Length: 193
Image 1 (cartoon, one colour):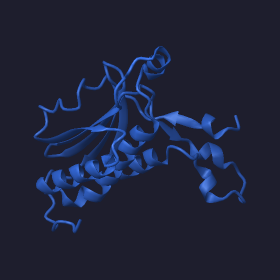
Image 2 (cartoon, helix red, strand yellow):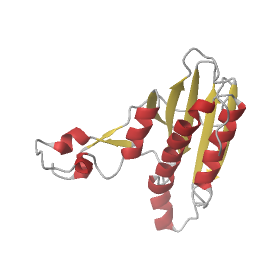
Image 3 (cartoon, rainbow, N blue to C red):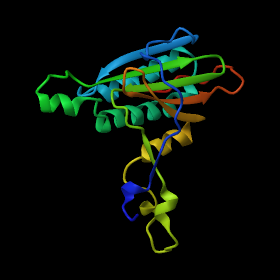
Image 4 (tube, rainbow, N blue to C red):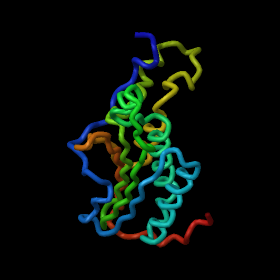
């Protein structure tokens, strides 16, 4: 296998995800929004959601990492997710409406969960850079990773856990968790955004 596409592996899988990201009754604090994947302000809306929620919850120290993770997850859904059944609908001439992405941020005293749900059941794939590197010392460092999937590696490095789960009605949810140390809130001043 010499193709970079063949050197990819799926993100860890969990059990079926909740039907709707807005199913947030178990968390102490939550925010959720459903976005139109084609809207030009989708990225700005999700970053604002993260900023507002984390500042309201006194979790200022996580704003940058959570904003980046949500931006990567939503960007993946916008650029790569093709809703289940769209190819069949396109062939038959049916209208399928716009692509939707649901974003939920949930907080408990000890952890923060991010969920980005889309309508594509294809598993998110991580690049397997160690398979591409080989033993060639002349290979440039940026050749160590595949062209796609780097955002998932960023998410894994910033969060304490990342995984995905298929949704019962089709599509998938991708999650990441941030541990809140001892459950105490940050007392840092708000960031100037």
